[in-house]
Image (tube, rainbow, N blue to C red):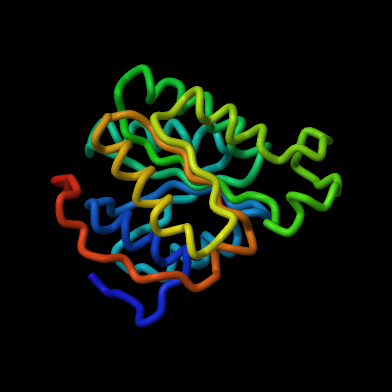
Length: 194
């Protein structure tokens, strides 16, 4: 496993996915997750599998979790995650730890009052997180690089422990921000993937 000298929120997430034994993650690119996807690609132990749409991405991850014990899907905000949540609901019913990761608006826009594309046309950017809380065992929103390691670890650990999906939402301007390096994954459930 290769580890960078400096970690960003995205490379931290990639390291944790790799440390639990994932070899692939499923993805649909969108403007709120482009930096995150670039960060994930720097981890040579993870292969990014591109999907044609978010529902397909979610169900691909669900199937991967059935075969391998856990999975990760990366989508964009609102139009992406709201579609992928259909598959996450199925994963919840089937006790499959699928980590749904979504890009999100710039953290500076949360209090700006701006109307943004890919939203429901309101100034409330928390609706997706609220919906995800109903379909996952842990749902976190990352708007600060300093808080990212603890929130990422909480979501992944909870998903593996409870055998249910988790949701991680990362503001697009935070994915490439520097954060603390991950510690050892001692006590984490490692998947037996071949």
